[in-house]
Image 1 (cartoon, each protein chain N blue to C red):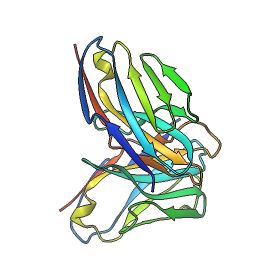
Image 2: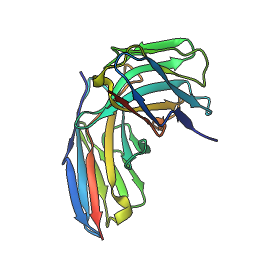
Image 3: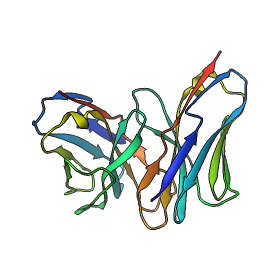
Length: 110
Length: 113
């Protein structure tokens, strides 16, 4: 059974204070690892897909990396508008289903 | 281009009532899924479809029914609502070949009393 664990559950940062979110996963064969952002009262918004260990993707202040057992979402010099819940999900090679972690709630204070 | 449209946005049901949550996408996506999101439990897959006429069960299918008669629509039916089905429901879709993730709707907040 696929498992996804995200840490920490919640993270408070000051504006400009860089940090990382962790996503640890267990899957029989990884087809893809996905990062989403979710704002309160809205549906998740797609950020990145990572497919193989060593792969990196960047978008503005966000950078996602992937190893064989975990993924990190690095946030560089965050701004208050980066405040959201960040979700990680994995898709195994045998199917189209996604298994989600519980998310990390990020708050960036001005 | 509306993306994934869910209706209604809010709904209150009495225990035992039935209803259908609507989901429509205008992106010609083959894959569609229904998730529920509960505090402390993340997003859990209810049912999914890889194309018109093809559906399958997810992690928490009991009490829910789906059908996929067209590529665009993927309704979720609650057969006899229970308080345990109080949740936020999200519909999502993607192409079969895309390297991008699912596109999600804005959700339906359901309360069963």
